[in-house]
Image 1 (spheres, rainbow, N blue to C red):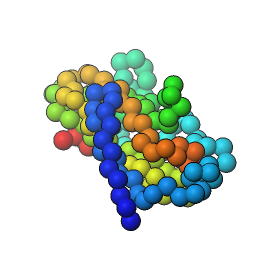
Image 2 (cartoon, rainbow, N blue to C red):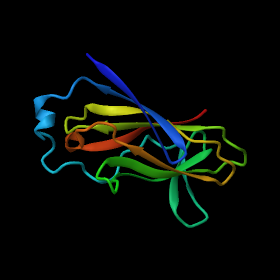
Image 3 (spheres, one colour):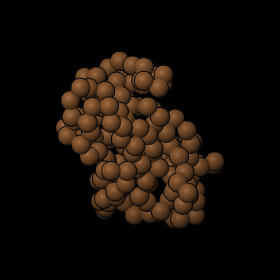
Length: 154
């Protein structure tokens, strides 16, 4: 299978996305999910706990309680390109060198169309990372959903 690798940047990080194969006739003709992507909240890994942030919002904890994820969703950019967007806060009392998220774009059968890791810049205590991961392929109508498959502190 022919594999391509993409590197995209945005919101203070970089993402390495791998996609499989060449586009088939179905993708070119728009034979994807009937209504396109299911925009809105997306699945995330099982959290290690939860916390209430200083703004009163609940957030899920990851990386041994060092980071809180809130607001992860599949959205459409102003260009019409689907993207996973969200916010992650350093809730620890120490600086974190990098947080990495494993993002996957899925078709209606649950197969990965594209995916990879996106990494933050250094996050000081209490700092928020607003991430945006654009879908890198030219077949966005084949996306049914997306998910955050993993969260780790490096």
